[in-house]
Image 1 (tube, one colour):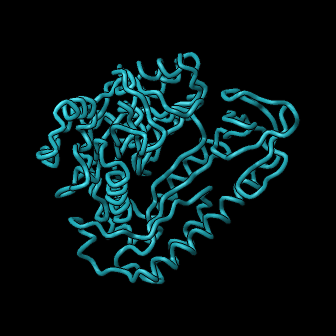
Image 2 (tube, helix red, strand yellow):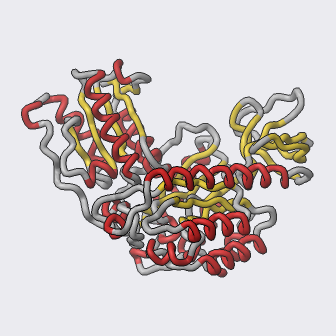
Image 3 (spheres, one colour):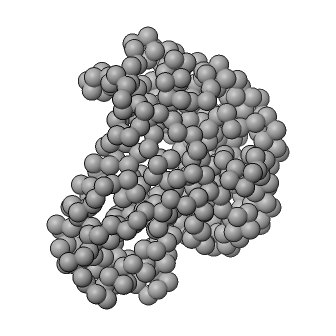
Length: 425
């Protein structure tokens, strides 16, 4: 069969799509570049926001209408929570994705459209479903999923319901995949999960088990950088951060999920910290990682958010000096505690989000400007550009051409918006 893949949502979803794609290729199927050329259309859905859920359903409808003869598969978070998805022949939950190949081949053999929309019982187990080794389509950086699920239950979030409780990959399997990725030529590994700092928690372990795993990945020849995916600030203990700072391949870049700079909003969100504790964690990180980049997520217009609370968030974001803010207007998710709270008007959420985006742009440009004069190493991706270790987009100046995967040392000579120019040594 010719199979077209579409991924919506997070990096973990992309990793799982890559895994499913690899299974189809190994079974002798081919990847179609366009949905109209495919025999099977697979949509990996997202439901983290109402807009993401709407888009998932929209794309499924579009796929089904654009190629009526193709088998349409819906898998992932939106599929897990939906009462019924009518525009798909096969529906798989978040932890049923490794059944996709078998289900598609079985369906292709019967083509029983009369029963095609019966939705299977979704998986609620807390067992990590291991896809084995997964090659990323990116040529220099690979994502390594080591954990799934979340136990936090923030009042705005449906992910614990869609993904289930924390489930950790075995250390042996994760290290084996990292070794495979190194042999395949990947130079940077991004260690990811839904709540990656909970790695090992389901086995009664603490965050130091993640540090042990990172050290073992660092010991693999060929891997030059290790980067952590999004992390929860209070999970980062002093012992973990100190140990991580001693791993020479660990990147000085942290994506710390803030969500709000207002303590009263954080309490309504059921976050496990206040703003001063978050700031203390940032200060500790900066004391251990020189020239570190700290990015974050912030929700605008959370239920009940007042003008004063929003101003507290803006002031806090500036005080911390994030390198980038991923900001989103609050999206109501049925079944969550926040859905029953007093909602902020859509136009207010939109205006606040626009303002925070401007603050993010100012901070990102400022961080790029602060890099001028620093000695950096750029991992080239293509066209003499790539990323520094602290995740600043960089262009390499001069006439010399560098291949993807090359590490280029040099000095930052200028910044242009969120980019920096690097003069190679």
